[in-house]
Every structure is written in C-alpha cells, then in structure tokens.
Image (cartoon, rainbow, N blue to C red; front, top):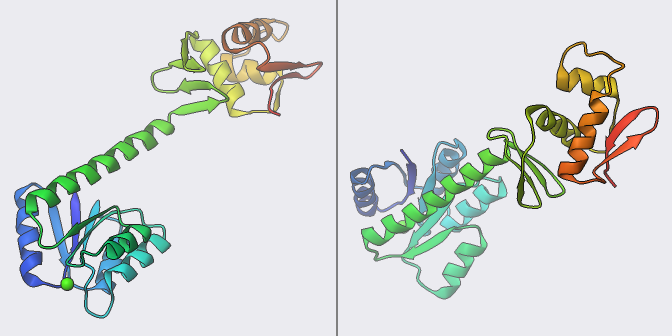
Length: 226
Ligand code: CA
C-alpha cells in the first residue's frame, strides 16, 4: 500500500485529498507547512508527495530544494494555483516529477499518482535485478536464473562453468591461481596435478570469447582488464 504525504495548508483541499486517496486504497498523511513536510519526507516512509507551493513561512519550492538537496528521491507532484509557465518550469527545474494546477479534477490527480508510483515500482524492480546481475563488457550472468548472455545472445554454461565465469568476472585484472580456482569452483581437495581448471578455462574461452581470459605463465589466469 502506497503512502502519500499531502503538503497543503488549505484544510478544505487537504481533507478532500485525504478522503479521495483513502477511498482509492492509499494511505495519506497531511502536513500543513514546509518544515513539517521536510522532516516527514526525510523519515523516508512515503512513496509520493503532493506539494502545494503557497505555504505559510516556507514556500513549496524551498521544500523541493531542501529535499532534492539532501538526495531524497521521493516522487513529488506539485499541486498549485500558480499556473504560469514560469511557475511550472521552476517546479520541474527544482526536481518536481509532475505539476498539476488548481482547480483540478481528482481523477486527473489520481491518474498522475498512478503513473508516478508505477515508475517507482519499475525502478525498484530494475534495482533489485541489478543486484543479481554480474556483467563485464557485454557478458551478463544472472545469478538467479543462471542465464548467461554474451552481447545479448544467450549462451549455455554448465554449473561449474557458471561459477568459474562468475569468479573471473568478479575479479577483473586479478591473477587467479589454479589452486584458488580449484578450491573456489570445485570446492574440495581435487588432485592438484589435474588439468581440470585448464580444461574449463578452455570451455569458457570457447563460449564467452577467446581473448577474455589470459594465461599468466607459471601463475594462473586473469580476466583481461585494460
Ligand atoms: Ca496554499
């Protein structure tokens, strides 16, 4: 359930917004001045702010400056009687995501809120995907699905190949010895005389690119990084 902060000094407008938002499944909170708006938004528990500009003691634009200046990324829709182009430009330039003029139709505000919150969800989804992706120069490993792409083309890796590739991609430019790779990928006391690491590096070169992993004589292997 999305939490919406209403910053509005007109009791009538604030009550109207609160009632409408609640009826549409949102959880609204009202503050009637800039200082409370900043303090409440900083608590970081809101998904979106509806911001009036004409507020007592502190203008809505100053609230915008304060929040964006502190890196607060909450979605902000300005809802103001100021309808000049200059006012809108000022609002957008100072970090508002949208601008609706009073008088307004509640349906239009609702639609704009939905658009903003959908954006925020999409960004959230992209961020959480990023946490599962290891990528390096066109090679992408998805740690959840185990999908591998090279320049956008799907490539199949076995489980061992995948772990070996991930190990290299996480240590670009670093020399990894055969023993380190054996230990990390095979995870048990493999015969150190075995050439399994060399064999698998060969597989990866075939599947991911011949020049990706270089041999450092007498030391091991390294993901090229220059
Ligand atoms: Ca006002």
